[in-house]
Amino acid sequence: MLNIVWPIFIIISIVFAIFTGNIKELNNSIFESTSSAVNLCITLLGTMCLWNGIMQIASKTSAMEKITKFLSPIMKLLFPKLKKNSNIYQEISMNVVANVLGLGNAATPLRN
Image (cartoon, rainbow, N blue to C red; front, side):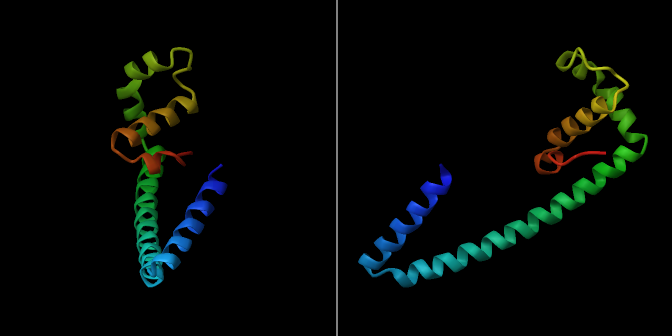
């Protein structure tokens, strides 16, 4: 659906810019938006790499076990049928910690 909506918006904005004589402003806004999108992607990529590295280090050390023990009461309530010693239990715990720290982007690809 979005592959239909966005091209329609783009075509309407180009046609409107041509009729109102604002094609130069449209061109400038396209390049400014592209520049800010690239800057945002580079910033997010650096942040995600940093936090994914920290989460991988935590998963390889005893910090993960301590975090899992700390979160075990909450995890028992949320996932009562999940075995405590499983790898899935630890991965969910690390994902919860990443989300609590506000690292939602880093929590998404979190895996051992």
